Each structure stands twice: as structure tokens, then as C-alpha cells.
Image 1 (cartoon, rainbow, N blue to C red):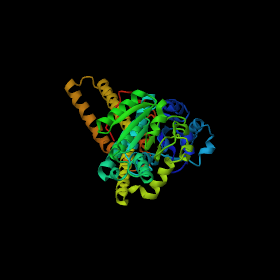
Image 2 (tube, rainbow, N blue to C red):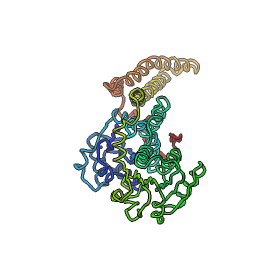
Image 3 (cartoon, helix red, strand yellow):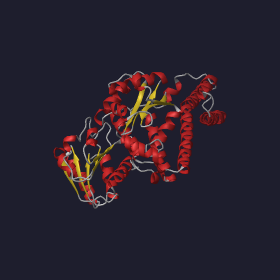
Image 4 (cartoon, one colour):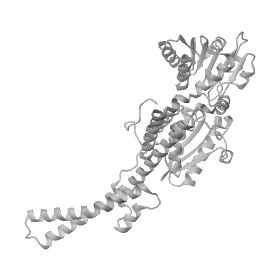
Length: 446
């Protein structure tokens, strides 16, 4: 069983393709169950953000797992796998681990160093855990990757250079309409992206904020939070969206809805310019809104071009340091996995040795029944010490060798040398069961 990562992102696919393949949040559990029921997949989680859709799975075989995952994603998009293969990237085994570490550290983001992806990976794990599609392998992998992501940010300062997609979009808005100090903002969507937008708007000196959301209670909660941070904010239902748009100088829209939310009918004749930042995937804003006079539409393609042209503001030294940390962590993780893989065989060998000792002591009792209890115990302790000393060096060394290289199957070598039943290691190792709500998940904020 190995890790397979299959996905497409802003680096490999255009926005239209990403929109079609994106998985709406309410449908993620269903897709996860469909993936797990595939023939070659045993564990699975999906990371679906505004600029990437990735599936991480524990699979029995590479090609079987690849076909299973590609088929499910294609059906989700209403396409056939052949239409997506040019946009897919695939990583397997150690390469899949390295890719996930890079993603979580922000090294694969449109804005290198952004920290939002750390929370998105954590949320993807939580969703998969609730769906019952995460077992021991993905649990350990995700816990490690979250730690690695936080380590990269704390030791390199990468997050201080890389802004979020939101801040990049607002920078585009400032270029088009001047600075945001004292101006009026509209945030459509009260989820994590909406909260992030409100935070960046506050830092930019915005004068007031209106929050519009399908669920009024969520809009009111975000508006109250913004007000507590010193910026006047009010909440309105989506039914009043046209009024909210007409009163705004800048609008940030990201709802996660399947269809467009802001349409041309919501944009009335204006006396001042309006910048609309559409950060939704699929799009939340009808592209024709950008054709309305005095309206500038900023979408994810615009942000992508801006970040490509600016080089994301990172320095080669910090990026190189972050990449070095990731590579060190990948080596350590893979070494630990190889060592852990041989542990059940080592345990089975020691169990087999103990059984042989017990059998021989029983034979001694039958052949020399006159031996007193004290003598028998001393003989037993001596034999066990001899066996333990004989096994200590090879069992310790085999774990070290397994950690150092993947070229040799040391578990199989042990089974052959000591004539162990191939099923013996399975009887002494814990089964890979789906994670439950009681299992630990890294709950620290990114």
C-alpha cells in the first residue's frame, strides 16, 4: 500500500477546468465515499480550494488507484478521464509525501508562503475523518504535514513575504481604484475566505464593511467580529445584494455556491468606480459584470497573472531554506515509515522465539521432572537471556537498515531467514481502522 496524489491546480489547468472539477463542500463526503469504495483505494482525503483540487489516497496499486481516482473526478466534472489527463499531475509514494509537504508549507501556492492552505489541509482531513475515509496511514501523514507546514513558516518567515490570494486581489483593486482607506467594502460570503477578506480590508484601512450571506446568522456573526476589531460593519441578506453593491467601492465575493451570485442585474448605474474581486471557484460573479461601466472585475486569473509577474515577493534564500526543511522532513518521514514497516516482523520473530523457549522448557520439565522449581526458573531466565541477546543486534540493525534504504525488503528477508509464517506480522500489528472523532487532530491555528 502506498500514497497516491492526483490533482490539478493553477499551474496545470485553466480556471474553466478547475471550476468544472471543483467539489462543492456539501458534496465532498459523497465523493470521498465513492472514492473509498473503488477497488484499489483504502483511505482517501480531498483538498479542494479556489486554485487546486487534489486527492490523496492509500492505494494497492499505482495504475489501479490512478484509474479509480481519475474516473471519479471526471464523473464529478461531467467529463471523461481523457479530457482531464493533460491537466492532471500525479505523485506516488515518496513523491506524493513531498508534494503534500510542499503544498501545506505554501511552496506550491499561487502566492508562495501563504498560510491559508495550512488550514485548508487541516479542514480537508477533518472532513475525511468525519466521513470515515481516513485510516492510520493518512492520519499519521497529515499530522506530520501540518507540523512541517508550521515549522516552515516559523523558521523561514516565508509567510511574512507571501500574502494570501485575498491580499493579492486587494492589491489589484488598489491599483485600479486607489488606496482603500476610508472607503466602503462589501464582502459576499461569510465563510473562511470572507473572514480573511474582512481582515485584510481592515488592515488596508477600509472605512466600513457590509457582509452579505445566504445564511443571515453567519453574516451577522462576521459583521460583529469586524465591528469588534474597530471597523463599522453591518449584515444584509442576499435579497438586498443590489443595494449593497451600489453602496460599495470594492466588493470581495467568495461563497462556494455552484452558480453565479453577483450578476449584472445587481449592478446599478454608478457615480463612482467599483472594483469587484471574484475569488470563488466556481465563479461567483457573472463575467459580464466586468463590462458594466465604471466596474473593474478582478478574478483568479487576474490574481494569477499578477503573482506570476511579481514573483510572489519571495526571496530565493527563504524559498531555498523552506525547500530544504521539506526535503529533510520527507527523508525523516519515509525513514520512519520503512522502520515501522519492519516492526511487525521483528515483533513476530520475538514472539516466535518466546514460543520456542517455552516449548523447550516444557520438554525439559517432561524429561527431568525432578528439577526443583528454583532451578527450573533459573534455567528459564538463562535461556531467555541468551535468546534476547542473540536477537537484539539483528533486530535493532534491521530497523536501522530499513530506515536507511528502500532497496531491500528486510521484512521479507527476516521471514525467510527464520521461516516465519507470512501472516505472522499481521497478527501482531494493529489493523488500519477508519479514524473517529476521538482521534487526535492538530487543532492549532496556522
